[in-house]
Image 1: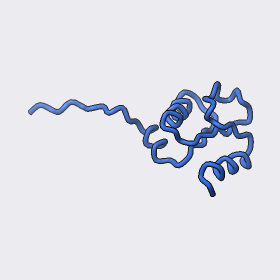
Image 2 (image 1 turned 90 degrees about the vertical axis):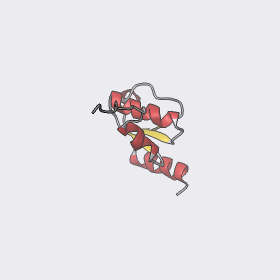
Image 3 (image 1 turned 45 degrees about the horizontal axis):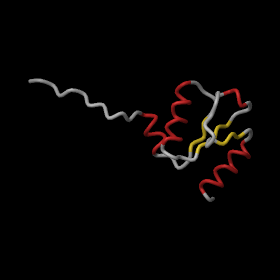
Length: 83
């Protein structure tokens, strides 16, 4: 009996993480984090990056808010989630 070929639909764990979120807070990271931010922006998810220095994550899309403190993250979440 012949096995069915694996069908790739293009969705990854990163997609599941982003698409099930109401908002996304990115922490300093590497290519995986950058990919998650890219997915969040592509799907219109409110996204912020919690960084001490802008250089920690490289260039971010204009729609990604940079947060330097927990208070900034809380304000972002209050704004986008209307809480």
